[in-house]
Amino acid sequence: MSEMWDSVAPGWDAYAGFVDEQLALATEALLDAAHIADGDRVLDLAAGLGGAGLAAAQRVGSTAAWSYLTLLPRWSPSRPNARAPMFR
View 1 (tube, helix red, strand yellow):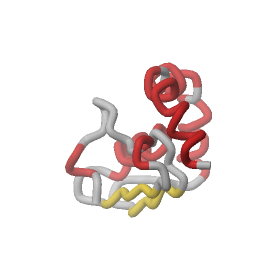
View 2 (tube, rainbow, N blue to C red; view 1 turned 90 degrees about the horizontal axis):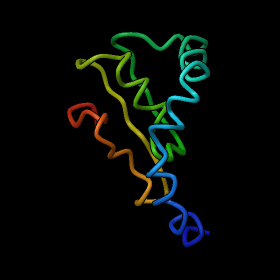
View 3 (cartoon, rainbow, N blue to C red; view 1 turned 120 degrees about the horizontal axis):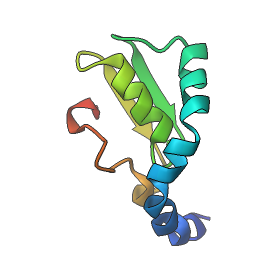
View 4 (cartoon, helix red, strand yellow; view 1 turned 120 degrees about the vertical axis):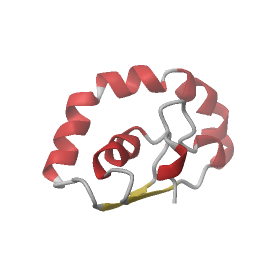
């Protein structure tokens, strides 16, 4: 199964920004519903490319913690908008 997902990872990566833009309102609604705020600790399971998790990381601030878990190494959230200090 991971071979199949790895084979499509470059395509997902190429369009990650577009997908994040298209899902921005839904992502904000999700984070609002979960009451994600400054100082929270967030664990993003099955993070994929990390769009929702990266948005959560921006909300929790630099003194909080955000972690992600993906079973597919090629899908780690390493896009330019990922802030390295937030990865814990």
